[in-house]
Image (cartoon, rainbow, N blue to C red; front, top):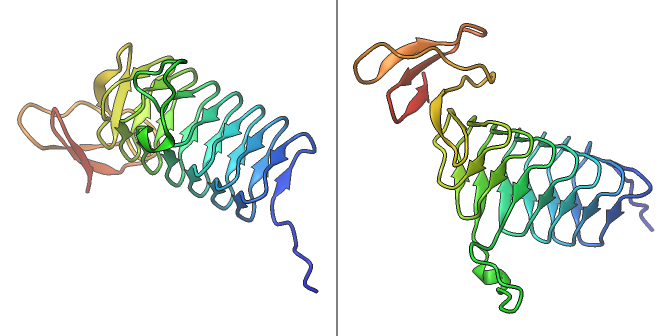
Length: 198
């Protein structure tokens, strides 16, 4: 009989339900709960008091800080950073007397390399583009483009960020100007509504 080798680490207070798919190198801290059907990619870190709902898909090298609930319908791509006490939802008009079926939950996707600042709220049914940066305490009510820096209530576009997380300098006047990160030197083509790495 083959013995299964545990390839991830979980604190003794964590609850990992049967049917959860936990990849090698994952770390799960105190009082966290991973439901059946949830999948966590390699080398992801789950902080204290985190709830990961059924069928939630979490990519590789994702960092989820303390006190976050990742509800059904939410997906996190590789290298996403979820700050402490970030709030996800999956029903737009909840009523206790009129519960929704899981097939009515709105999908929320957080793109590769995106950062969600502490205490931000991501209203269901939106996507946050790759490498976007959501400022702390913001309320995201609409889709966020790739590389966008958004913050406020509701969150609005305030500029663009590099793949390294630093704010990019403002482009010169005119459409689709080239800007370079002052920290790492990566270059981007940006306009008022779009930013692309080149």
